[in-house]
Length: 391
Image (cartoon, rainbow, N blue to C red; front, side, top):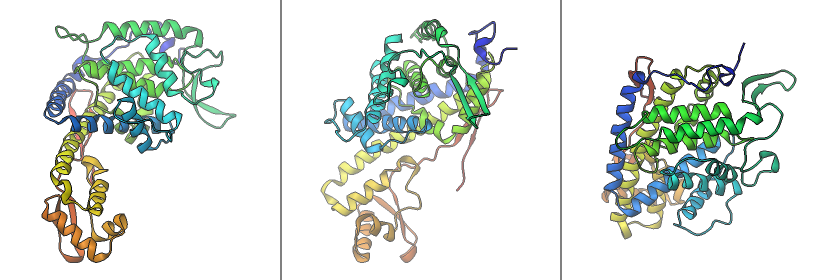
């Protein structure tokens, strides 16, 4: 009896119920309008910062999902370089430069049809600095089974096994033809944005065409599919949300790999995409407001105040946990107690910070939009459930 979806006679005729995604598709389309409107109203500097910060979020977290830890500052500098906004970063590792170039390439080429050359180029970027066993820039060729396993070496648990390597070129040709044939047009979107992006990711992972890096390229494909539905370089940044729900992500993919009924996977993916979009909207609004605030404050800030504000802003739209206190300010800036109290009061007078409490219990919050993003789930009925985490 077949174990994996690609072994089933009807493969790759993947099935789902579009009606169960109708509400999610409508919400995603509305969110895309909000995102694009916010970008259109932002300054050039704001848009550049938004691109760099959201793409670096995606780059760092898509690598973390695969157990690879990258330096965020190096990744950001590599992204700025790839966008022709900065100088080369000699300290960046090949992995940091590679993932940055991949995601910038996704942004720049999202309107172009998909082809094997593009996928091989992306793989070479992701595998930069790896040894030849990763087979950079080509489909996998090993006769050994491509398996996802865990547990003891002598008694491993096989979570997934991909088609044999000799089937990969034909499987990928069929996948690429489907991806291009379902690209939305102005007159007739052939498949909902969420349905298509989720299906693309699940189908690609079922083929597992590369020796390594399939997860990162599969998520990049989802970003390309979502961008084609806007149309705008995708700022959805799926990976930060997937990372926070990584266990569920792997379980959903594992379940989808054994059946042609991808409805549960697509609903799970739709919830992730909606949550990621809500997070991106909050981040875009936060970054735009941050740029305006820093420009307005200009030379009114001293070096210590600017350093403390930038540290608070690093947390983005989720806010600086616990607010800024005199003791935190002293730790960040090495200021004396009297100087910290004076600097914080000055930031409140400049309307950069909002004070709460009194005396020893005084804390300060940024005068910027803070918007915690709920966990979003799409039920089998198509209803959308939002769950707000409490501290």
